[in-house]
Length: 97
Image: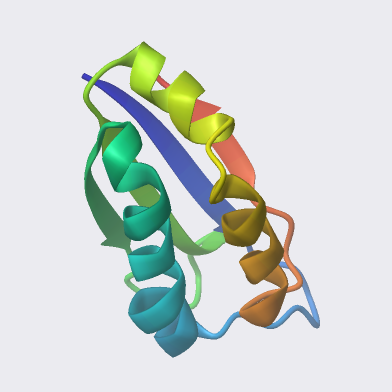
């Protein structure tokens, strides 16, 4: 199994629409990358306003090749373009082996 951990670091004045993220963006990710080997998505919400991230998600893939396939999949451009609809924070992506 391999993962992408995507975090959205809090920034003063930045916006993050948690409802859109949960209800629209993550289902879009699952639809676009499921056929590539995405096996699950777990959103991690901050326990309080003192946390350094507005949100994080752990995207679980079958293996590293599945992540590579997702990054070049036809739906990836739509996934990336959708980010602007829920936040103006640039995501930080951490890839595990």
